[in-house]
Length: 445
Ligand code: ADP
Image 1 (cartoon, rainbow, N blue to C red):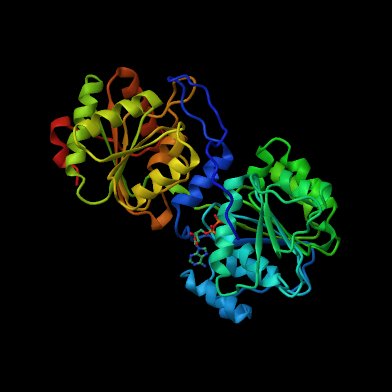
Image 2: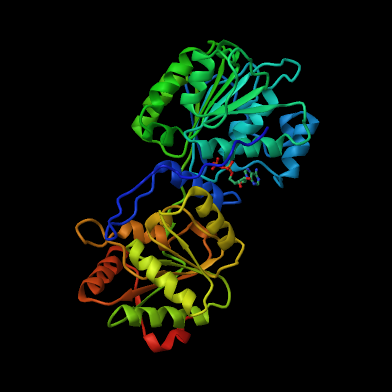
């Protein structure tokens, strides 16, 4: 399938107030997570299963071979480097592929293998001898739809007979024509237009319906209603698959409207902790001393990479400019960038082209770059009331479970208020934040 022209702006314009912390929409957050995470989130948790009918059999598989996929599809799965199903896939895949089809609601954090699971189910349900859409997948945004489509294209590379069509902005079809691709991946508004208004395809012939990123979907005005309207036009026999990274009552209410008699599977999130992290603070008189501290630290980063968090865009760009002038290769990630620019910044950083990434809170949550060994809080995180924001601190610094590699966190303190925040954070977690002499960055191991 051809990918429509790239979007230029993500449309989420924020206040230009330099003193305010940047916000990021759930859709952007989800996209960034997908882009930066190139492998599975590891977990020690077990799957939780709920089902209405306790007599219906439930299988779980330890290998992809055990799923009896079409050989070309199995080959595609292995070609992606997947050796064995992830924790969520072990339980989800047999149900998604079962005959007669079963409905499913699955919830697990980003990066646990949901997309790969439903894409595999979508591809294996297609009957390529029928030239009309049979599978419909809804995503909350253009970019997320493209991400899913790319997974589908890669997984089906040995199945050239399977055709995919994007129903997203920028894609146009002439009146009176019919879509003959097998799979439609799109956003709710466009799908509703194409299916209901223009009748480019017949919603009553859809046999697999996937609703992805349900929690992001309901965070977007109007999307939930559009999804429900689409759902009403689907046949009763259609298999429903519903995915979400979170499990709030709102999401579950939505799920209940869309999915009847489901198997519900959940994978609890691995808790973040500060256990493997050495925490330090450095006293600085002013912003210039903070800068000196940073360059000292930069000097000792021989392995791994660093992320520096600033409170405002203004500080972040000041720091980036100054470091660049001094000959350091740094990357900056801010809300001013378009989606494409952010993707490219993160890709370069992941590839190690820059050792330091400077950012505001845009990157604080949930995104972990494996090779980052040092996190610097140029400014300590605080809430609207200027109180210590311990949750954000944990998201910036913490690692998950026993998979977390060890790391170093450095907090730069330039005022009694900053010292207070640091003390409050130390007290909150009950984990010592050690004093580090600014001149002596070598003490960091
Ligand atoms: P989610 O949809 O839950 O965010 P994804 O399906 O996007 O998760 O998977 C996260 C990452 O892990 C992707 O880079 C994907 O290619 C990879 N992945 C998915 N399933 C497997 C697997 N069984 N083995 C190895 N890697 C996998």
